[in-house]
Amino acid sequence: MFQVQIKRLPGNEDVPLPQKMSELASGFDLYAAVVEPVTLQPGERSLIPAGFALAMPGELEAQIRPRSGLAFKHGITTLNTPGTIDADYRGEVKVLLINHGREPFTIQRNERIAQMVFQLVPRIELLEVSELDDTERGAGGFGHTGTK
Ligand SMILES: O=c1ccn([C@H]2C[C@H](O)[C@@H](COP(=O)(O)OP(=O)(O)OP(=O)(O)O)O2)c(=O)[nH]1
Ligand SMILES: [Mg+2]
Image 1 (cartoon, rainbow, N blue to C red):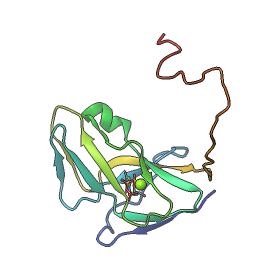
Image 2 (image 1 turned 30 degrees about the vertical axis):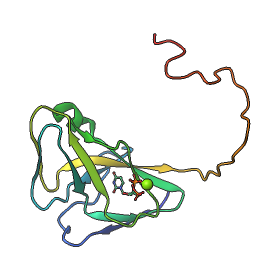
Image 3 (image 1 turned 90 degrees about the horizontal axis):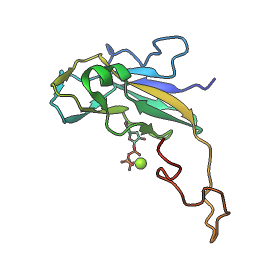
């Protein structure tokens, strides 16, 4: 169990903190901290504040992922999927939503707009070399094993 500190930002006392909607949910649902409703026209994007900031242990990151219900019903998704919240980021968590649907979509204050999943990030040191070892795959990729 990791402890992650969360700070509600001023003016957001009424905005629920991120919440797991079922006991074993992967993600904490995020609530829109918009002051006024925001309408996204088809194809339009907007950075939606979530009303809080985090301090998490250095071995974690948080990913901002879409909610499938909003994507399926309205074409609303996160543009930079998954969004990356670095462990050293102390600013407000924000959600970059885009409307891929055919109708305008309005985001109301306190509406659940996305979810936040915490992940372990291994510490990696990149080591520059002049040759890499051989493998069966080699440089094959992008469908070279066939499409069916
Ligand atoms: O969906 C997102 C993505 C990012 N961030 C914040 C937290 C993250 O730590 C920071 C930087 O994000 P990222 O590295 O994806 O953006 P960048 O374009 O590389 O900006 P920077 O140069 O600040 O790293 O912005 C969010 O609040 N929501
Ligand atoms: Mg970056």
